[in-house]
Amino acid sequence: TFANIPLGPPDPIFGLTDAFNKDTSPKKVSLGVGAYRGDKGKPHVLESVRRAEKKVLEAKMNHEYAGIQGVGEYVQLALEFAYGADSTALKEKRVAGSQTISGTGACRLAGEFYARFMGKGSPLYLPSPTWGNHVPIFRDAGLEVKRYRYFDPETNGLDFKGVLEDVNQAPEGSIFLLHACAHNPTGVDPSEEQWRELSALFKRKGHAILFDAAYLGFASGNVEKDAFALRHFAMEGHNFLMAQSFAKNFGLYGERVGTLSAVCASAEEAKRVESQLKILIRPMYSNPPIYGARLVATILTDPELKPLFYKDCKAMADRIIEMRSLLRYSMEKLGSKLSWRHVTDQIGMFCFTGLRPAEVAELKEKYHIYITDDGRISIAGLNTANVQYVAASFHAVTSK
Ligand code: LMR
Image (cartoon, protein in one colour):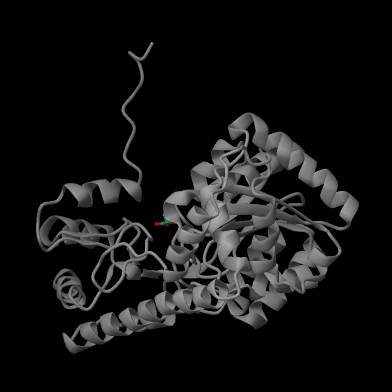
């Protein structure tokens, strides 16, 4: 049965973690997968999450199945977190929502939804570049993956003109994926003014929109600010899908807790969409795991834990911002002839360094520093003990 199964390549992101774990060098540094670490380089559990764990344990809850859409209370709270408690769409019950297997599961469910209702082979446009996993997620869901211009390597910033042209030229019936904030891998986001312009353009074109919101609160430390695009599009009357993850902002990576929601035209439409999300979910995994959802719901309803969470989240965002400065100034102090300004200009967990594949390979082989092939580094992997070593290594491979 298996005789003709070919050996597949390792995953471009998780494959790096495997290689890093096998590396016995004491100097090794993991800047691959986007998972937050504290200044000691260890995985980090938020204080608010620790306290919520205790509360969930003490509540002696049962282990019954959740509904197909997951833990009901959690879904409502998660949507209020994203769209704002005062969101008109939520108040008018125009938002269909379901718990998902984190952001990846939400994107995949969105892909299945589009393939079923917009048709297999419908064009879905991803920014160039984008998170590596987006491509197989939507391809495997049966959509035709296309690209729109996004990053300008000349300026290390947004190619806004390119975005506008590509949105404008895409054929009717296209789907666009927009990173709601902290674009992965570039750390380059549209400004609020540019989001407004994009909203107006999407209105005219009528393309379907999927927001991928994996970093709310994590980009700037302020959920409201990070949710600007989502909330603006909702306020402007767009109908769209939104994939939400609690992996990064709540540090609940392995609990796989997220949502997929659809901002609809009416409450009646939302009911129809919701019924179809359930029909898509049931044959895939029946219903999602409950533990992570309980933690998020506990935090978002507890008058002490909620403000503590905002503090915890801001502390992570602030440490990342500090590491950006430290890396940039270390490069400048070493006398690098390249500009490292983009390290502090970009936001979120990642920096798109501009390191080339050969430099990335040398960093791995000679310096035991693990980076994805596109030159993206997870700033969360830097700390006061390793940043000088990383900067010196970057300088060594880029100054030849
Ligand atoms: C990343 O981009 O490193 C993270 O989102 C983890 C993942 O699932 O790839």
